[in-house]
Amino acid sequence: MLDSNTFINPKNEYYAFDIAPGFWSQLEEKIIAGRCKLIDAIEEEITQGNDDLKDWVKNIEKETPQDFIFKAKEDENVVEYYRQIAELVYGDTQFKSENKETFLSGADPWIIAAAKAWGDTVVTFEKMPPSNTMKVKIPDICKRMGVPYIDLYEMIRKVGMVLKN
Image (cartoon, rainbow, N blue to C red):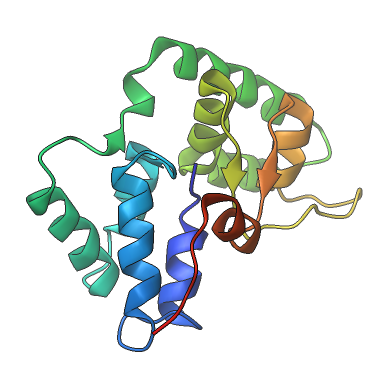
């Protein structure tokens, strides 16, 4: 279950489309095969720009006969876990109000809720924040919800991606 930063960071940094096309073709294969999941809320975030990433997703949509984007927002179990996450976030007095709103208005709670509902692991570059943080972060909410999370490199190894010529 891929967070938007697992697409955006590689695109902008070390796996740019022009220098690491093999990364993107292997990731596409894993997504189409269902080994890596892309949910609707993340797809909305990563296709907001007018760039190579948007083109890549739209090209997969055009060339793939099956719908490879999982409809988290339409799944009643996911919606129930989203509600639980919202209650958890709103109920935590440590988080600033604006940080609660920012977190809940984006894709982050949806990816956690979907992973919880479907028994998946969240893949993100976010790190566990310090205990006194006022920001809501994916690893913290994953931990509280009992959802495993890993970074992109661990996922690459788990799904058998190998970057070569």
